[in-house]
Length: 143
Image (cartoon, rainbow, N blue to C red; front, side, top):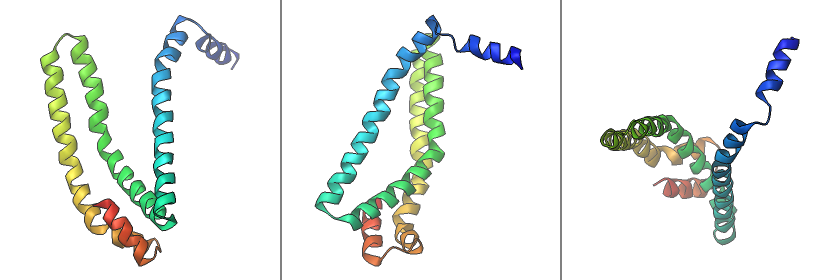
C-alpha cells in the first residue's frame, strides 16, 4: 500500500510534463466555460422574451436532442484522433478523406434521429406531463 501511495505521489509531481498538460488544457477549459455561459444566456433570453413555458419546452427538447447526438459523437471523436495521426504522419490527403467520411457518417447517423424527434417530441412531452401548449412549443423547437 505504501508503494502504491509513493507511485501516486511520483505521478502527481509538478514537472515539465504537468506544465505542458495544464497549458494545453486551458483552451479546452475556456471553451467549455464559454459554451456553458452562452447556453445560459440563451435560456435567459428565451425566458425573458417568451416566458417560462417556452424555457421548459426548450430545455426538454435540448436535452432530448443532446442525448441522441451523444450516440453519434463517436464518429466526431474518432475523426479528431484519425486526422491527428494522419497529419502527424504527413498524409494530408488521408486526413481530408477522414474528414469527408466522418462528416458523411455523422450526417447519415443523425438523419433517423432528426426524423424521429420532428415527429415524436410532442408525444414525449405529453408523456412527461407537460400541457399541450408547452408540448406544441417543444415540437416547433424540435423542427
